Image (cartoon, rainbow, N blue to C red):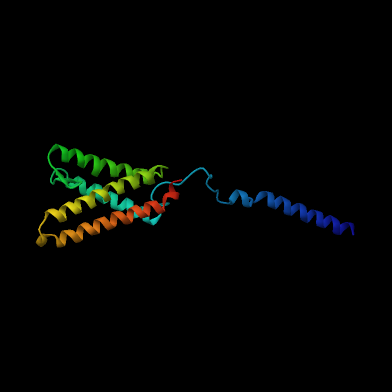
Length: 170
């Protein structure tokens, strides 16, 4: 009987030494990120915000290529010369650049800034569309009207998408 007890003690002792040599589940388990740390960048972005970033990036690139070559429309007025260059820099390069990086960096105010930016361009587009319709003849508005309505629909869709994803920035 004593021999059985000694064998069991030795077996338990051997198991304990083996367990001490192998890493525990806590050591091998993947460490979770701290609750206060938020992931930034492209990967954690929701799909709708990725579309916003892509559209904004394309808008910035298009503005760079069109810089100084075309007048800038602002609330139904066509700006040319120095005012057009300043408006293009501020509205088509600087403002979307701020939105681009603030959304990627997941800054808490990024969604409010994005709403203001997209709302400004939606209002600008609606006023420009109304001015265009009232000032142009009926023959030349069909193709441009469809294009303008498409752009306004995209801007409205992005505005709604940003509003729906505002919790992502909290």
